[in-house]
Image (cartoon, rainbow, N blue to C red; front, side, top):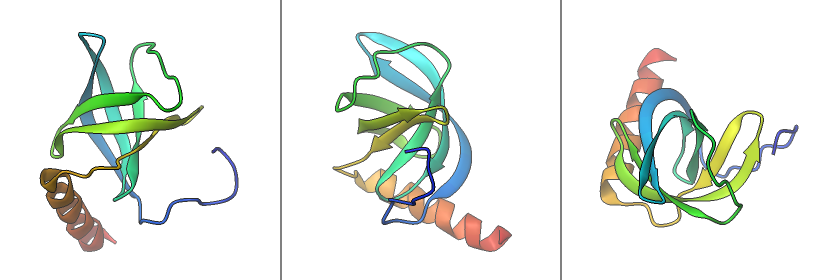
Length: 104
């Protein structure tokens, strides 16, 4: 996942949003680095169990709380897929998309 081929089907939007990962009854600080309709790239400030296929509970500024599945881990961060996108995630993505068009 660190290579030359873009595998996403959806447009990704670079962002920097503070977030929390809630797992194993603990909360870990993180940052969302990019977001799309299919998933997101996350950077965690602490070591976590990053087993591919594991589902994490994420609470991100602007987006809200949602679940995402780990699909990869690279030097860039934790690559997550959002398979059941809640309505508030879709709404936040719409806002981010409009902001991206405004600044491009």
